[in-house]
Length: 402
Image (cartoon, rainbow, N blue to C red; front, side):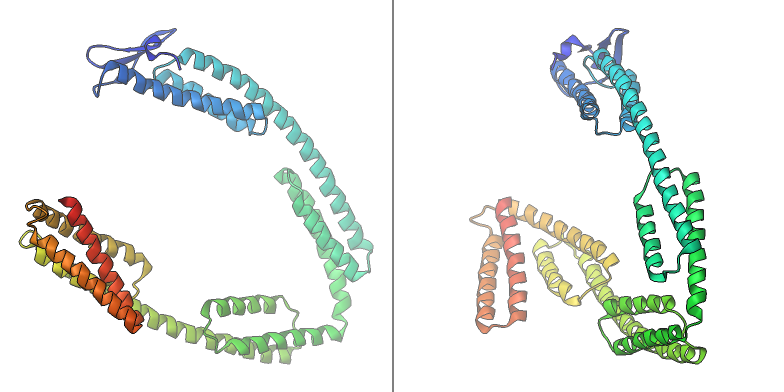
């Protein structure tokens, strides 16, 4: 990096100037330290600009970047130099950007030519697929083979990109018309076959049987998704005879209604439970926020611990409310901790009765945890662990504050 003094200076009132071929230009003000530190600060800004130029140049040299995007970046950087709040060789950086702009324009032109060639090839490939589809639609009577080929043509079509929208739309219309013509001829043929009706009835009987097997399920998400899939399959299946179609539909719909009604009842009860937990937690928070910390920090700490002990026992609350409630409770915890810190700083570690008492409380909590573990009571173990962590945290903070 060149010395900042070669390209800038700071005058007596702290104004920072950069030196360019066009003369000096004010780029900022420095009051925070020595002139050398100020020039170094603005030189780092110049280094950041140069790093951006280096990155653009590296991308262009790799010839894998989007030249058009690189050109836009170069133009943006070039335009920013006249107002850049930086100290460095701005003239040299401008010259580099001008050269890079020429390279980017050449690469962009080459990319456009390649894109045009690829578009021509893509149009030729899609045109060949359309002509094949039109021939199949007009002549083929091998229904399955022809239908499979239409699907293959569609897959091949989707894999071809680069055709302009207008041309693609016109070719697609021809393909769709050919596909529709073939489908009509095939449909006319199979409409005469009674077997089609029987197959449709068999399919829908299977859908009804599966739907009825799911009506008592309690796997709500998976079952709801499966029932929706069954509905999609139903809509995609051919129609059975009029009488069978109506009977099967009523059975299918009744099975779905039974499941979704039960799910709605369970979700309503769950929502009520969440609302109840929310109300209990809001009440605890209101109680916590009323604590008079300044009057008696120790009493405030004891009261806060009682509230913390009840906080998680309230149960789950709506997700959108949990973070806000926890944030407000942490604010109370911070306030109590700050008050305790102030109280502890007024005493020495040896004569601080609060530290002594807190150490005793940690020891008692450790003993309660040991007893719960010996009894194998998972609920008591969990509560004892939470209490021990809380007491140790307050003790550590108290000892650090001394």
